[in-house]
Each structure stands twice: as C-alpha cells, then as structure tokens.
Length: 373
Image 1 (cartoon, helix red, strand yellow):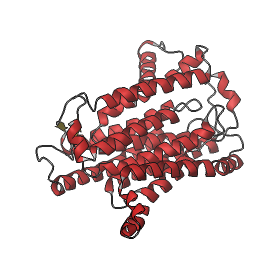
Image 2: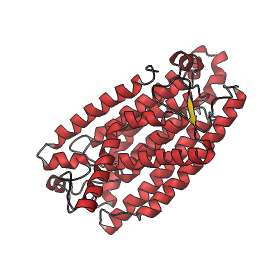
Image 3: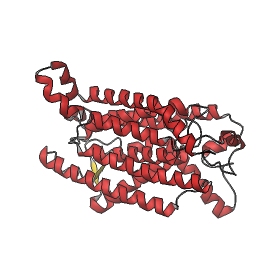
Image 4: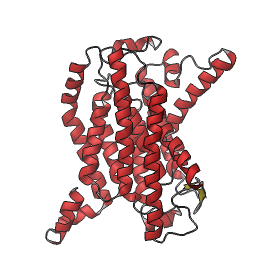
C-alpha cells in the first residue's frame, strides 16, 4: 500500500525512492509487525483471558509439568495473524500475485485453526474439530493457492521469456543440481504442492508443545526463505548462484519480513513461562505459510532441510504410532519427541534451547544448498 502511494512521489522527494528496494520494505515490514505485536499483545492477552476462564485444555495423558500451565490462554495466533496481515499489506506491492496466494493460505489455515481452538475451548477437551474436516479444508485452500501459483508461473515465463525448457509452473528444483527443474505435470504438481503446504502446517502444529519451541524455528525458517525469495526473484543473483529465476517471487521477502517480526513480537509473550499459547490458530497458519512460500520459490525440498526440526517431530509421531500398532510397543516414552525428553527428566528450557540450536544448524545446511550446485 505504501509502495503504491509513496513511490510515485519519489520524483519530488528523492528519499521515497527507498520504497523501490525490497530490502528496505522487508526491513520496514519486520519492524512494523514487531511493533504491532508488542503494542497489541497485552490487550490481546487480556481479551483472550476474559473469554477463556480456564485457558487451554491440558491433555490428561500429557507430562505432569504441563498441569502448572493450566489457565494460560490460547489462540495467541490471532496476534501473529494481525501483525503479519497488517504489516504485509502496508509494505507489499499490491499487484504481486505471489504474496496474495501466500496470504490466502496463511489466513485460510488460520481460520481453520481458530475454529479448532474454539471447539477445544467450548468442549473443554484437547480434541477440536474433526480431523477429516480440518484436512479437507486445508486441501481446498492449498489447491486454490497452488493453481494461482501455477498461473503466475505460466504468466511469468511468457512475460519475461524465461527458458522455455524450464517448467516454471509445474517444476520442482532438486537441491545440489543447478539449472534443473523436475517437471511433475499439472496434476502431480498440485498434489505435491498440497502435500508440502498441509504437511508443513501440521508439522509445525505437532512441534508446538512447549513454551517458545515452535515460534523460533518458524522465525528462523522465515528468515531463510526471505533470503531465498530475494535471490530467486532477482535475475542477477539467481544466475550467479545458478538457481532457477522465478520473476515476482522476490516480493515474498516482504511477507517473510512480516512473519519474522510477528514471531519476535509473539515470542516476547510466549517466552517461558508463556503468558499465551499460539494454539492451532498460529501453528497451522505459520506452517502453511512456510509451505506456500517454498512452493512459490521452487524450493520445496529445501524446506524439508531448513524445517528439519518439524520433520523430526512429525517422524517421531509416525514411528510411535506405527510401532505401537504393529508390535504393541512404543519407541519413545511419549511423542512428539520433545515430550520424550521431558519424560526423561530434561527441563523444558533445556529442550527448547537445544531444539532452537538444531533449527539454526539445519537452516545453515539448507542455505548451503544454494551454492553447492
């Protein structure tokens, strides 16, 4: 919005030329989202407390330490969504379709998560909306966003005359391979992209089990993909790094800046001991956003590396359930795996900080794939 209003005035006031630079607008989006989160945070928490007398329901079979958190309000993801949406709309190029497609996923998944949290609160149970209904909603939203992203790829290839041999709309880049996109075709690409968005969304949801555990890895991943979006959307840098140039995706750096700022603002209130939980409202929306960005910039497989912590948490649940069904025995004391370490006697801050370290290391590994080609 500021881009459309202020950049045309740069001929009369030269400092406004800064709005043409993605780096400036990304930094502005980050700071705006952070300030919104810090300012609205206390009022949002008070509002949630008034409407949630007993706070988030605690699982009866969960770690005993969690019962001390009884009464802490959930749905704090509302604060994240407000910060991201307002900041992004202020600093983005309103004509960029990639940001709108990612916003659809973010807000759509956020609404699903909000309804899930609402059902948990009204039923006073850790079970929210039916899983099949939630999954169907995620699929519908993902299909809409994926088709939009595909259309943008076709349009960009025609407009910017990108190499016709590269399937920009339906291709997937392979880490460590340069100048190559694996063409999945329309149907398989839609299926694959939906798996990425829905999988990332639910993976972050599974990770969100301790104070601050999910929000920092999300922030790290958003920062990494902000850089990737900037490089992929720039013909000079993408050519130098020998990664696929996807015109228009550089604008997603602004969205990633908003997500980092919103995450920092929320962490201020979610740091141990948490004053508020993000709930499914936050975890589903942030995971979906990361998945949608990865699809748009053609780095879906890199997301599995950068977001490796989320993958690890998800795999621990799959292994636990599979093992129990096949053998009647559990591999971990409790799943997801962060609960396993709680049961082993690790203190919550220890688990959280060590998992943050793992997320940071995986982010560095993911970034290295940009050059090692």
